[in-house]
Amino acid sequence: MRNTTFIGFFLWIFILLGLTGCNETRREAMNRALNGEASTSNIAEGNEEKLKLKWNKIYNLKGTKSKKSKVFKITGKEWKISWKTTPQKSKEGEFILLLRDKRNKSDAEIIANVTGADEDTRYLNSKGNYYLVVNTNQNYEVFVEELK
Image 1 (cartoon, rainbow, N blue to C red):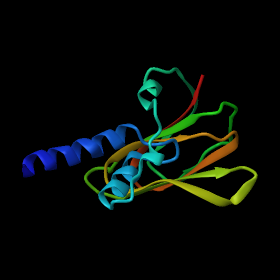
Image 2: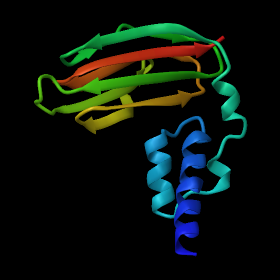
Image 3: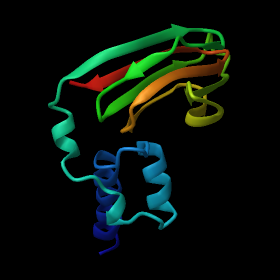
Image 4: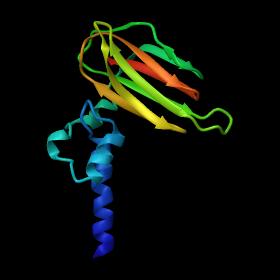
């Protein structure tokens, strides 16, 4: 009986990770689920369909040092930021990725704040002109894509 409950719990977390809403990363959903804060109102139905959709590349940023991106324009109703980071030579460091709206430079949304190797995708649904700020000493690559 305990094994069935244990498997069911992790199956529920796996489903939450795959069906997380537009402004929540998989890691955030898992933390919410483990803390007992997850609810079905945060689950976006039809996310499996997103995997089949066509994404248009808007911006790509990669490097090993901190930098600010050029401003890019989002015109569609849905877009995503995907990122991957790895330590340089076995020296594990921190990777922080911020999203800033060109109109409101004092406000920033944290897209990633990790140490060591990691990767994730964040779905967003706002239009406008944005730029990214990366603070790191690790290797990284960031992709901004918009739904066609």
